[in-house]
Picture (tube, rainbow, N blue to C red):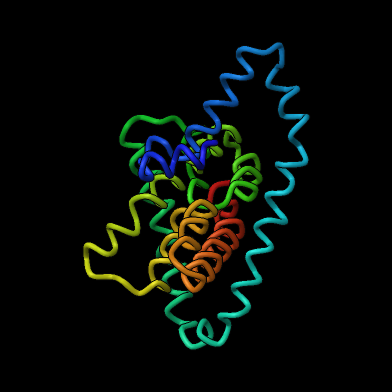
Length: 208
């Protein structure tokens, strides 16, 4: 129903499924005699399936391996610079607005996919729920804004658009990239995977 509403609204950002879906769930939990703890327990399997779903993105990525190898240096450098910038900009902006240390630690993992973000946030002392909210906001904003923004500055290569979506908007951006074409989706999968790996390895070392 959320997807149908999104399409009917001509993909209006306020009607994105990751906004309307959780709103419907929250309304249901408020109206029905179901606690949030019970809800979390019942959907544990769906939450766990985020992991295998992410791994399954390796299939389209495999078909692009020759092309990816040819641009290996550019991909590695972009991941390093983009991953650092994503964390630095988020922390700097939040710090300027007076966020405390716990909020800063929760926002540090905002540009990586949810399963990794939750684990890292708890490891470095952040709040998992806040990290998950930041991940969703980042993903929706990036998925909606990045393609038209890139095209407005003359970038039309689906590989660049896809990689940018994966690097900055993780799983949501990757889903948007597959709407463009399979090549964009494969490069988005690569960007999301490399950024998640880099952040998981380096961020705890820097912040713990």
